[in-house]
Amino acid sequence: MQTVIQRFHSSLEKIDAFSAEQTPVLTALSGLWGETVSFQISCTFDPTYYDDYYSVLNVTCPECVTEVFLVEQAPCSFPCRPDATGEYLARTPTLIPDILKPYQAEPIRLNSGIYRVFWVDVHIPQGAKSTDIQVEFRDRKGNLQNHQLLHLDVVPMQLARQRVRHTEWFYNDCLCQQYGCEMFSREFFQIAEAYIKCAAEHGVDTLLTPVFTPSLDIEPSCRRMPGQLVTITRTEQGLHYDFTLFKHWIIMAQGCGISHFEIAPFFTQWGAKCAAEIYEQTPEGLKTLFGWETPATSKAYADFLADFLPALVDQLKQLGIKEKTYFHISDEPSVEQLENYRAAREMIVPYLDGCPVIDALSSFEFYQQNLVSIPVVAEDFLEPFLKAEKTGEIWTYSCCCQDKLVPNVFLSMPSLRGRILGVLMYKENLDGFLRWGYNFWNSQFSKEPIDPYRVTDAGFGFPSGDGFLVYPGKDGTPVASIRLKLLRDAFQDYRVLQTLEQKIGRAEVLNWIAQELGDLSFTQYPADNAVFMDFCQKLYTRLGEYK
Image 1 (cartoon, one colour):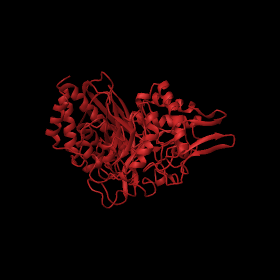
Image 2 (cartoon, one colour):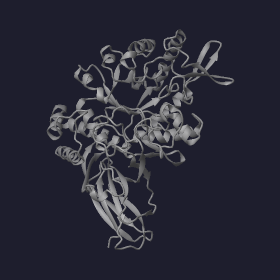
Image 3 (cartoon, helix red, strand yellow):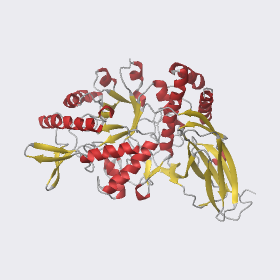
Image 4 (cartoon, one colour):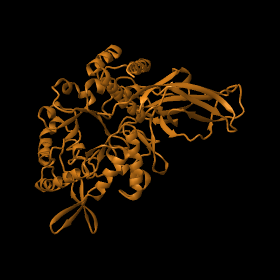
């Protein structure tokens, strides 16, 4: 007698309380050593038989480690702009499954005809063998309510190391505002460590590092909460730079799994018009040294950069990360601001000792004129960059404006629209991916903090979900989203394709992708979950031929 009805589903489905019966059923999983594969369980109460309206889920796998999350819905009050194109789950305000609340085997209340949904991560260790994942529901007295098995086919092969960079911009001030902690206090670093570790566990390997307070998403003359990792004081000999906090940040991040670092921009966003916000420590407290009042090319700021940057680069060398560090000038400059950007670039490049300049942009002219070492190109402006002769790394990025056909992870988008990113990046031989919002829990322009469980659109500033991939959990711990998981899976797809490339070569992998999925581009890719799942299964089958 089964008093709980349960079904298995792909991680690509977004299942609400009433759609489970219409959602395709998953019959098996596949994965490589070192990969995390996921599936979902929908369950409801069978009114024909009942002793207890509550149920306890237990998921075990003899060869792997499992993590279980209860899927909860998030408000999607701003699904997309009216002119947005491509696949969307909704275009009017609604609720969307997204929040992954860690589940610790507590009893869950069930109701007939209304489905609860669980998300399960299965971490496949080195040496694991194919096995069955056991899923059972029991009532509060321990009586069995349902029991099913899901087969896991493990390809005995190590997942290739990630060779592309992945950064999700990290906002320290948002942690302070949500948890009421002081910037760079002991409590702050404990919280930041948990959030950075979560990011690294989901494929993020590059961390935005606020040597100075990031001049990001603020209006002219406005300021973010001060948060610079270098303490500046004035002495008789001039300015003194204390890198103690900076060193602590780097070492902590490395311990979390971060390998590369981005130094926050030295000039204001959208064109490098002014200097970044920089403070000196005085006996009376923080005093603004440079900021909105400082023209970008002022002699005072140029002299400061000429003095400070060599000291910073020396620290990078001491920490062994100089070859793994990127510098930003100004985020998203337009072609009209090209000369401003050029002048700002000339102020810092002579002192970087070969460290690359990397910035998000859309205009091909910056690349033509060699103004950025590594262009981070908006997904919908990639075409001319991809057609040009590749002379170095090219990254891509998405944000609120990437709402027409290209991949993105708005709440209102089907999961596949984000997951396809990995295959597309592999096909186009891109070297990195940047998103601007890992934990941006502010309104647009950082005017005030928001509650991300209630406000997912930065106060109607950006389509819901654009600003963050994690929710603030209790005791300083992050709560993951479905969208964070699917980006992890996208980068794992890239690595699975790398693994196949090691066996048959890149050209043959590209031919095979074209045979299975057709002529792919950032505006043309499968929209059908079944097609993509079949592609993935064939990929594992192909790899299995070389075990």
